[in-house]
Structures are given as structure tokens and as C-alpha cells.
Length: 370
Image 1 (tube, helix red, strand yellow):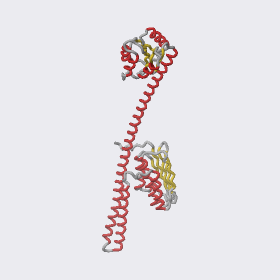
Image 2 (tube, one colour):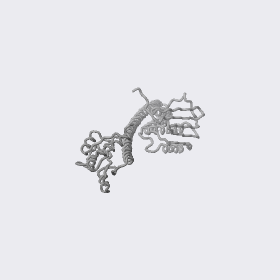
Image 3 (cartoon, one colour):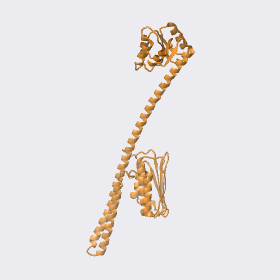
């Protein structure tokens, strides 16, 4: 029979030792027996038992003192002690519990009572050990989770930093390209005005007016690009509220109120929120400038997989293969790719334009070969 527990019996009466040892061994317990408290303490130091049956009245060191010394030892203090005694006074039982005993059995004892009390205490010990193991596992799991959260937070910060850097680089390139183009055109107009100054003042003046307009447009483009460098385009607002503000601004400029269907019940990272805001912002800007649309729809849906975005209008549309990607459309694609997203544009003359974007919940920066 498999051992049910290691029990140490401490009693100076040999008949009691033999009787208890035989009864418990027959029930499958491993049993050790000693006749005095000093030997018992030495044996427990060498091999701690699962439970101690301890007689109170023994010569030399009585059971109370043995229990006190046991409970003062950090390595042994969790061992349950059941006192066995012929004493039946209430004061004896109170003292037994006050020194650390967990139960009390009166002599003469009954086998069934002894077994029930022993098994009850051993079961409590097993449950306590299980609870300690579960608490340790819970603490370990919590520590692992905290490390994972710290790692994810640090990774998100690195991703957002990389996205911000890429955004600034993209804006710098766009400023260089668009401003350079505008300055070249402006220079040509100024040269033409100087050439015409002496021969045709009216044409020279008209040319200067066009040059001034080019300068104003270039300045506005630079201001727009620089304002896009802000680290938080939402300015602390929730994404849904920021999009509603964009829709209201669009309505103020065009008298067309976009139909917004927004479900952000499963929020994503801050970097994705920023990109979604930029795509809608630039898309509405393009519609306002070029589309002459009367219907505009914005749909955002979040799921366990990520986020889906659709921006659609019924405006003039354009031929994709004949359109040079400007600030808005190129910016949309670059921002989406930076977060592992996919952006598609569908349009043709007279059929409006539809922009769709999909972002995975777990996003990673693109591999630049470094």
C-alpha cells in the first residue's frame, strides 16, 4: 500500500507506541516512534515528519515544551501537532492549543477517532501546500505577464518612434519635392516678369501676380507639412471624437456632412489611431479640393483581427494609372505600410473614389534590410 504520510509518535509508554504504530501502519502510514522529547526533536531535524502525535506527560521534557521548541524552529513550525493525553481538564486543552497544537485526543483513544483526526490534519496540510504552490504559480504568472506587458510597451514605444521618424522623413522629402517644384516655377515667372518689364508692363504685372500666387501656395504647402509633424495629431482626443471633428470641418467647407459609421469597441494601438486619423484627414482634404462630391461615407470597424477603414465619395473620380501620387495619396500608403497595413484606392472618372485600409492588431515595422 502506498504511504499516506509520515507520522512521528512521541510517547514514553511503550504499549501506547506499539498500539498506535500498529494501527497506523496497517492504514498505510509510515510510522516512527520515540519515547522522549529530546530524541523526537533531533529526529525531526534530520527527517521532518508530516504530522506529530505527542504525549503531554513525559519525564524530562513534557509535550508542551517539545511543541514550543518545534514551533520556534522556522524549518519545523508548519508541522501539525496532535496532543494525546489522559488529562481531560479544560485548562490542559487550552494550554495544548496555546503552545501550537492543532488537535487533542483523550486517552484511552479509539482507532476511528485517531484516524479521522490524523487524516483531517494531513488533508489540511495538503490543501495548504497546494494553495502555496498555486500562489507561487500565480505570482510567477503575474511576473511573466508583467514582463510581457513591459516588453510590449517598450516594443510599441519603439514602433511609434520608428513610425514618427519615418513620418518626419517622408514629410521632409515631400517638402523638398513640392517646395522645389514651386520655387522653380516661381523663378521662371520672376524671370519672365523681368524680361517683360521694359516691353509690356501689363503682362509683367500679370506674371508677377501669378508668381505671388505660386509663392502663397508654396508657403501654405510648407505650413501644412510642418503642422503634420506634430507628435500627437489627435491632440489628446479619442479617435472617434477627432474623426467627428474632421467631418464637421468638412461639412463647414463643403455643406456636405459625411456619414460616419464608427465601431471602436476593440481599441488598437496609438500608432494605428494616428495613421487612421491621418488617412481620413488627407482623404477628406482631397475630396474637398478635387471631388465635388455630394455624398461622403466613413466606415471604421474593429475586430479581434484588427481594424478596417473605408472612405468613399461619389465625386468626379480620377484615372489611377494617369495620376501622379501626391502628398495625400502617397502619405496614406506610406503610413499604412509602416504599420504592416494594406491600403487600396479604387477610382475612375465619373465614379467617385473609394479608399480601403486594413491594419492587423499586432503590427510590426517594415523590414528595411537592416
